Length: 405
Ligand SMILES: Cc1ncc(COP(=O)(O)O)c(C=O)c1O
Image (cartoon, rainbow, N blue to C red; front, side, top):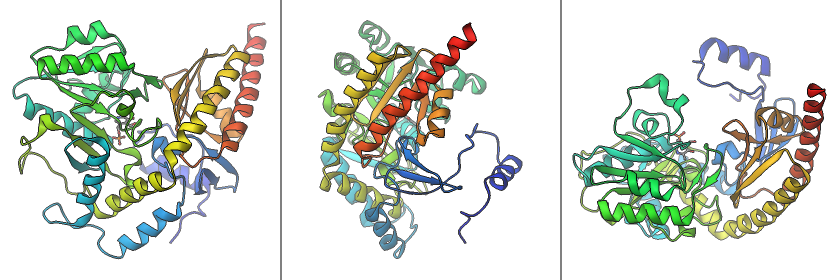
């Protein structure tokens, strides 16, 4: 039974009656998609420049994913991590070879990947409780990941969380040197911070974190859940800096739309993780892992990284040109297909207007428009977006002038 004909009002009413109110949902009802296009319940089409928050890197209804889903669902939907199955090993081998790290552990989400990373760091550093993380970081909603998320508003209602976290400013080299010591278990960084407003960490800062980790034995964890798997133009964002972490966490696009997270571990973790130390019922599900292999195959065979680099570089120039014409754009930040456009006022109303004009975009913090489009998004979509954003910003500037008068 397909429920795609349910009216938007019926869907909203049922959700309001029966779901916990964890989301302030936008009144937008996507029902189908193809490539970078989404169609809503009324049949209206949109460019999807958010990609399900960095998940749908191959866009919607990709033929390779559909074929893989059909094939694998004909075999086994679930087995158990008690037994062997070819898919986990194949995906682990691909990720290990591509990253230069040693091994993989599969779970179901980003926050779970970060929780596992914290546990593995603790095995490397028994009894060391300290974690160094960044202000404005985001690592997930479970107790450990939340404890190292640098947004007070997310943490406050749930304290006390996992203790021992020190927050420092992104890109502050003296601060990371001062904060990390022999009591630090892990340093946790997003090479490009997503929820924090698309803030790329400098290569010098990543190098300083590597140096202090080496000096103290702290485990350097890169959370590439949002910025990894090609988003910034290399398969792993850390490959642009040449700084290799001890652990990388992945999720979002990895399962081609199904829940799949991964922890990649380097030499510092070798030999430490034993049977019984960690596990999950669903993690590394055969269907999700097969989709993960299909995502990696498609990125490689269709040269999607070249595309992300080429179109991303061109788009950056377009955004900078728009900024030079438009004083309400404070800063443009990002790489490849991960962009933050910081405004001099709230981004939410601008994103709402963009939706009216047929563009799905996101926000980060209060003032940043965030774009995480599928890697298959055509140049035309970006051209039309620049035009639409220019129009929306012109309207909001004239509105705020009217208000001030
Ligand atoms: C950098 C980063 N880490 C962790 C997470 C948490 O991932 P999940 O929502 O899959 O638990 C997110 C989600 O937005 C993220 O962007």
